Length: 247
Image 1: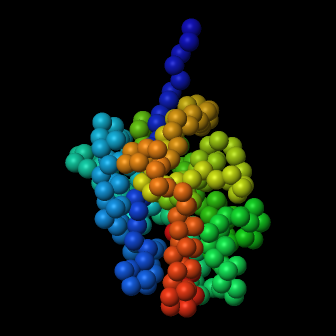
Image 2: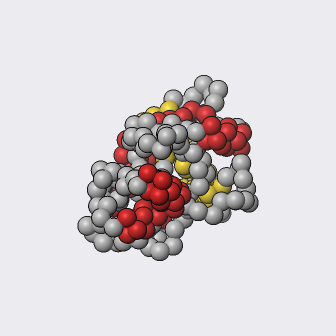
Image 3: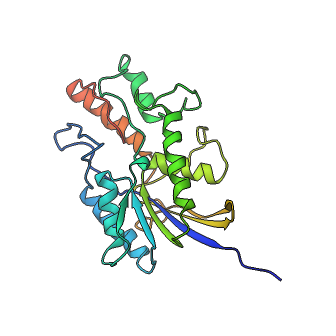
C-alpha cells in the first residue's frame, strides 16, 4: 500500500530591495547597514500577504539588516516562531572597494557578472571571499537546517547568491555555470523535502523566483549586479568615481 512520504516545506526568500547607495552616491557598508528602500518595504508587504496563511514552525535569516527587515515583515503578527539568526547564510563578501580596479571597463564587466569565473578554485567575488569558501559555509548551514526534524514548514530569508547556491545544490546542478537561477528582490522559492532515516531522500522544487508584487516580471530585465555596474558607470562619468559597489 502506498504510504505518503514524510514531506516538509521550505520557503526560501531573498531580501527585499535594499539601499546600498546613499542619495549622494556614497556606498553604504552593506555588511551591516543596507536597510530596505521604500520600494523594498512595499515588496516585503506584498510578499507577506502572499504568505499570510502559511504557518511557519521555524524562521531564520542571515542577520544582515535587509534580511531581518524582510523576515520581520513576512512573519508579521505571528506569535511564533521567533526569528533566528544564522550568520553562515550571509551573502558572499566582496573585497575592499578600491580593490582590483585597474581598467575601469574590465572592473565593470566583472561587477556585472562576478560569477563568470567562479569555477576557478581561487576565484573571488569582487576581490573578496573565494567562491569555494562561500560554498563551504553556506551548504553545511543549509544541511544543518535539514537535519532539524522539529519543523514542518521553514522560512529562510537570505540573499541572491546564497539562494542560487542552495537551489543549485538541491537540483544537483553546478552552481558556477553560465546558467543562472535569478533571484529578484524579495522573491519566494518553494522547496519540498522528503525525509528519510539518513537525511533528505528527495527535493521537489515547486516554485522559483516568485514575485507576488510583479508576477510577470514587467520592467525587470537587468540583474541587480548589472544595475550596480550601470550605476557605477554613471558615477564614473559624473564624478570620475572608481568605487566598486555590490548589488
